[in-house]
Length: 408
Image (cartoon, rainbow, N blue to C red; front, side, top):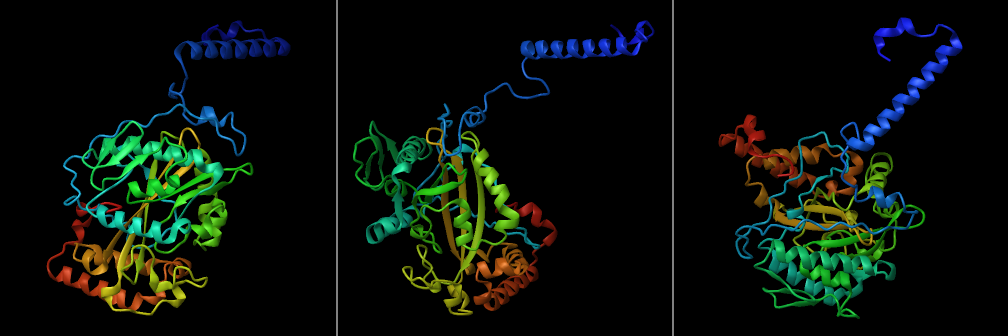
């Protein structure tokens, strides 16, 4: 029936209602048939959602394995263990400071970043794993399959991305630089799977798994070079407990809901990354001894020496990636630390002024969390002076947006 023939419609109210219902039903039936023939409407993709199909079947704490394989990684062009420099992350902005998760999409090729600091990280990790043992790595029984899945992912990805450093084998992978052989199929494994994974990369590692209460729990980790926190304090904690225990600023009112939803929805085919930064007033990558002994109960910024000379100030930045493992359902954190003297990064254009603005813009809770009171006088005086020197040497502030973009 065409819209132009309204004069032919019945005029009795019951007849009108009957016709309206019939038109609605016929229209719905036609749309349904058309959708079946043409596929999903309104621009929705017809490709399967690697998590949606699984989560529809999952009960809290359960995970249905997903048939997803990470795309092969392209070899890193001209990568060299002696000359490839660390990525110059400078993830701070001019104030005001906003508390957000700050995640962005991650390209699969860049999942793990290695550079010419690899030998130092490798040596520091080997020493720490030997000296501290299970204080810095653990895999709980229920997380074993997820930890092995991470090993499998590394033994597939690393030889693809860094073929000059790693070679894939029938049982795992060889490190061509260190001479290490990783057998990930024998049982029992030669060592804890998270300790083994830690030896392969420069990152610290953590895997969160869902439980029946719907929360995600830290059940496997190798936190070897974290600087300010210890795995033994947080293993077995939920996502909420970890952030409450660490007094993370803004977690309850600005981060908790979004982070909880993110963990529940993160898909195996959609990795993300984020960056953060801290100021440290000693040169120890593994543990910031300026805040106290690593094994003491009372470690904290309150115990740090106040306003140490600028030569003791270091810029500590983390680049974190998050992805879901398709078989076990665990959410993997890789936590790569970049560690440079403040005096070094302040030779870069725009860095001193932008960092000074960022540090000044921290709210009281963030400032306390990052220990600003213990170093701000010396640090800010130095940053301001270096910024003025750059301006005097012709730095053009109007061209800053052409020089860099976040997080560089």
